[in-house]
Amino acid sequence: MGLRSTLAEVLASNDEREAVQERAAAARSTGCTAVDRLESRRRGSVAGILRSVVLRPREGVPTVEAELYDGSGVLDLVWLGRRSIAGIEPGRRLRVEGMVSDVQGRRTIFNPRYELRPLPGE
Image (cartoon, rainbow, N blue to C red; front, top):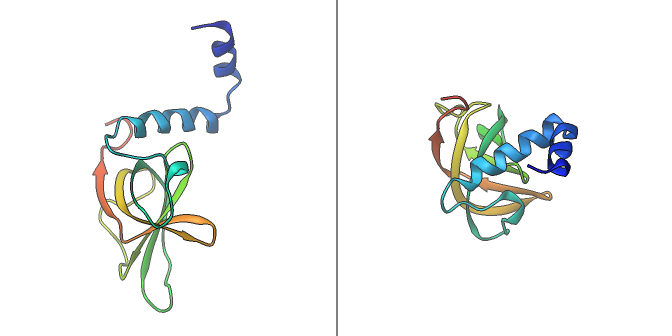
């Protein structure tokens, strides 16, 4: 490891270190695309960690909304007609797949297929 990379690692913020770790974890998931490379109106597959999960009604319909972070960006996940989903909780690693939409400038997948991954440290 060179002096420059050692210095960069020492000076990196916790957020920068977390982003590097998440990008590395996502890169190990075969067939996945980085969030910052997803295209609207195309199917995408992403691996990352859930940062937040909330129950938020949309037009009177119960909805579980989650924010998936992969180190390159954030992807909103929305499950319509659900009040909760077993295993979908902050800190959980997930691999999701579905049609990517642009909702108010944010990449979003509605009712994604998902696969729970081991929690960090498992």
